[in-house]
Image (tube, rainbow, N blue to C red; front, side):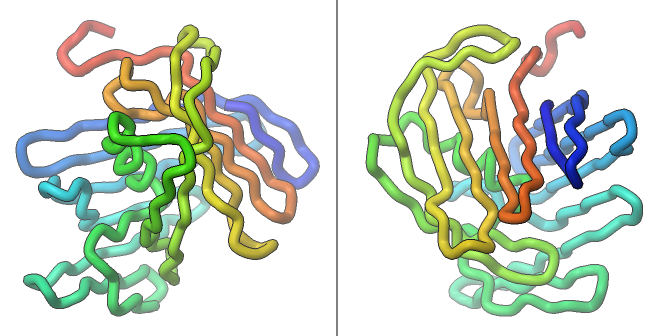
Length: 204
């Protein structure tokens, strides 16, 4: 992972742990960097025919923040409550949190065609955003883990304040991203590149 924050460039190691079972999932991203510190994000929830349905999102850095989801029976919309007491009402079916959205997108790789777009509701800590995600196309990509034939996605910018996102997926790795680039409007940037991956059940 390569990053820039407050004028400081840094390198970091991160581990993405994806654990689905028949009905539930748990996704954890753990980051540790010299001078920057540590950060852990966790998304957990239920696996449905439509994909991930988050139950809880946690973001632990200098302090812990969380978002708890409640999904009544359809067609009632969902809701979420943040640690600070903020409530988000009217969540549409298919809403993701800011970590799980990258696995949800990976599940659609086989059906992606250049120019195709999706509108994905994404709940952050305090508000609901609608991400427009576009398939840029297929292209080769080389990361520390190797070279792959990948599908490149990007979040279509919506105003100057939105988070810029690019992600590359390959069918060779179970729909998980091999590279993600996040760019904040104020200049903070994170470039995550896969160095090693291990399927469940194989020795480290």
